[in-house]
Length: 211
Image 1: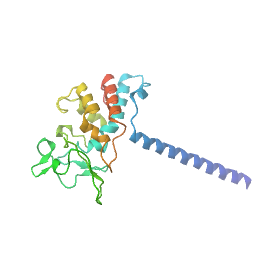
Image 2 (image 1 turned 120 degrees about the vertical axis):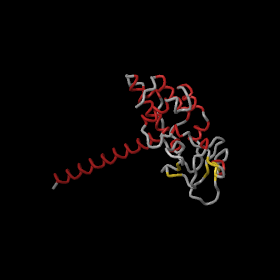
Image 3 (image 1 turned 135 degrees about the vertical axis):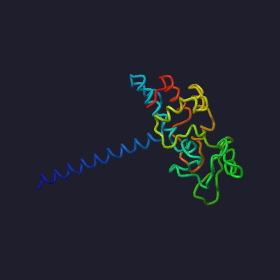
Image 4 (image 1 turned 120 degrees about the horizontal axis):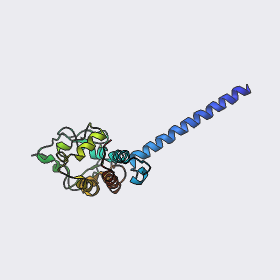
């Protein structure tokens, strides 16, 4: 009986350790999804090309986040929310990515985020002076990090930007910066715009390799 009790006790202890380990793993995963590691943390990767790929993969946590991805759809209709469902009410890209006559983006989206005070399924309407869709040449929806990386480096698809201009766009553009200040009710992009810029610069400095 005593031996059985010991076995039961050991078994319960093992299960508790397993549950504790799983909980720690989930906590780390949750933290990793909302933070960005600094470039210095990738210094232990000796191979420069491998380090470059790892740096882009980290930056891709921003690039592929709904705050960015929703404005880079594969169709003429933007996406909404973390679930990335089609925009409601229905809208279409139109010329320049700002909608069509009578249904422009600016009809609902002002120059800044607007907090709603009445009961609604969302807490605010996002806004920016240049609110609109990215050019269809920069559609990211449904693509892997590696495919997006190649697309970002392709001047025929990235707005004729070289790597320095690409870094400037990520690190300084205030429309990109909206992703970290999306208004009440929306999850911001991971980390900060400054950290995203640091990662992109480090990626460039190590050869701009794609995963």
